[in-house]
Length: 183
Length: 180
Image 1 (cartoon, each protein chain N blue to C red):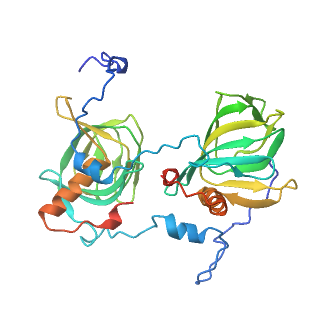
Image 2 (cartoon, each protein chain N blue to C red):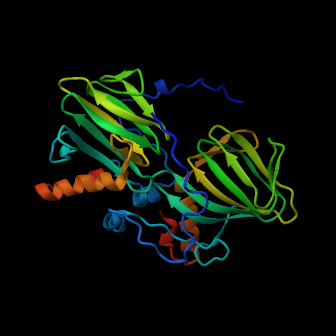
Image 3 (cartoon, rainbow over the protein chains, first blue to last red):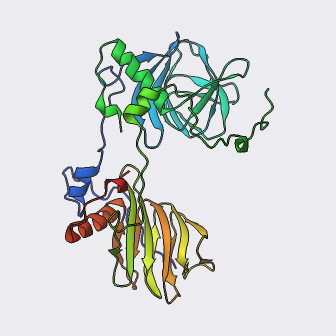
């Protein structure tokens, strides 16, 4: 049975700018076995290059998680264009960084700062009408099935496709693989 | 449009290994995580005491998702005190039966239950021979004493520590199969 407890956290619990030694019994285990958090620069090519995706688009890969088939990247549409109809079998979280984006299937237009959520079972067609295209930050889980203009199934894309896309380009261009991208 | 559902999964049933088309075989060879197998022996994973009347047999630890799987064994009529989940739980009864004081169902062998973030409940078994159940848990698990005072938050780190400490004490080698 639940009793009503006081909600103590009305603001950040501390605003002191110093490291507080948090009571934590498993520090040594975390150090030994956790993959660790990390910082990946999205603004430059230092951590990850722009890899061409057709003529009018490129992908900057940010994260690959082979345990959960999760991957993160920035999709850059360099001008007005389309990413053809595709069907999601997992979740997608996207934020528009520049330009604008919409789907032929929906009424809204995504603009910078806006959050886009997609859920399993949705098939849709991504379009940017913006003269400068768009940059979209995405965090994707699970496979995406791609179809041609006649609705013929072409390929299922997931974390393996993303790693191949990244590593193939790196090899061709003599860029070392960045370990930070592999969770 | 093709006739959807015309082909059924039940038709795909050849009793042989079929060579599945794989466009990214080199990537799988290099990065694909192996599945795990943990057999029934105590060498593979021992029963680790959890108080006087219970034990836990650890089966999996996933530090990336704070997931842990195990079999809980309460040896005779008894209680796992009130605890609150901050993540999701899947469980299947294996032996005996257990229930929560808060709910009206009883989980018996083969029965399936789920628990969700925000649930606080008290696990009991009324059986003289106790119970065993398989649990797959995600996230933190807060334990309270019988006055409702918070005692400790258990998550994948507690469960790993529970397993490793016992193994070290007993000279049992750590089984890498438990670490996803």
